[in-house]
Image 1: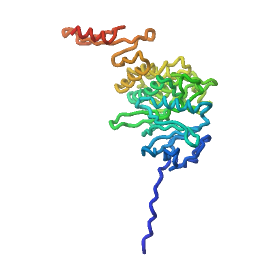
Image 2: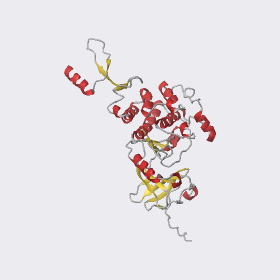
Image 3: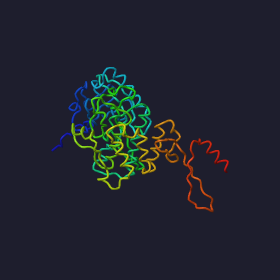
Image 4: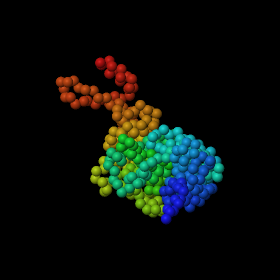
Length: 381
């Protein structure tokens, strides 16, 4: 009896993360359906759905010119009003200019032939920060390292006049480097807006309600500035320590919780939380923006004493990004006076004579340049 003729092998298409065809998951407002293997704009081949949001899809695609896998975020044109396309591309150029290693690179943005908007960005591996943190309680050094890495591109965006507004753990990926060090990257910034433009003029117009959404974004007249992202960073820091979101509920219940004067505390959950962390979280989660730290640098400055060396170096870069006056400042050698003076001072350690107590004496020089201090040290021999 002869054996049956084997079927010719068929090329398998990459499975969907959702195990559903892209066309079944097309949000209302998109001008086209997308199927696995489809050519999009003549430049990309669809592979799978990574994420679905109101009015948009995040697709894993293969760039036909380079053969590399990237992420194509397809956005409904209905989310962009008036002169929104030009503003959309302008904000995409700002995001593409960010230099931090902790944000996914933006390569291109524009309009597809079917009328949908798109952002082409780097494909980042690993798990979402939500999957990494939920149900766990990270150690202090690990939580502060992640927070510093996330805060760095946020501060850089602020320095370029961009407020993110939609920062949440689901938009952050975490993976391990080959050295074993943990690395976080913000992957999606399409809910951002340029600070100088009207509050409603965001990159896509879409804003998702999450436990990490600042209360001022939910009122009849939403407004956003640097302190809006400080709130989100404080909520993320709470999640890293507590293993859960700081606020519970959906819809109106979540809105009420975000506006409530009762702020969540880590102390009932963890006795090992440093005082600086609890103080920073309480300040960042204040309902009124005026009661929060003024910017990202002010937030991480509170956390610096308990942060590991790697996180302190990242916080040092945040200080440089926060203000030109701090361009030469380093947490390792500089300290800020109290809030009343806010002057940058230099801590210089001089050894005592060998015959005296070997403990160093710390002197604080005020108002003198680094060149003058180096010249004085050279003259002393």
